[in-house]
Image 1 (cartoon, rainbow, N blue to C red):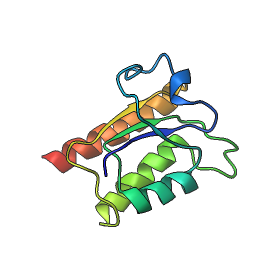
Image 2: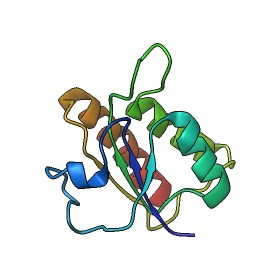
Image 3: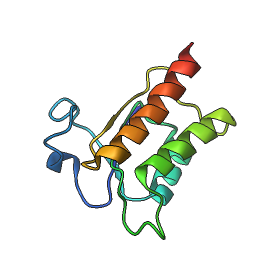
Length: 115
């Protein structure tokens, strides 16, 4: 199944008017935490598009967007999940360092995987 995943603990996709994809993608599945992301991917597979927020709730309790991206990469590497060949992502987080970290991790991993 192909779907778009929006990961954010507070906002809805319609709230992220600054996002690069805003207005281009209209169908979204929303996840508020790592637990919800994990359940969705276990059930539906890795989506074709994910938009990440970085800061998700209380950092002592919840994984942040970078840590979720790490988990997706690790699960792909160990064969538990498979990132689709046409996978794309964006980071709608307004945390500039968190945004850079997520983008670097996923860009590097996807480039290595596709080479």
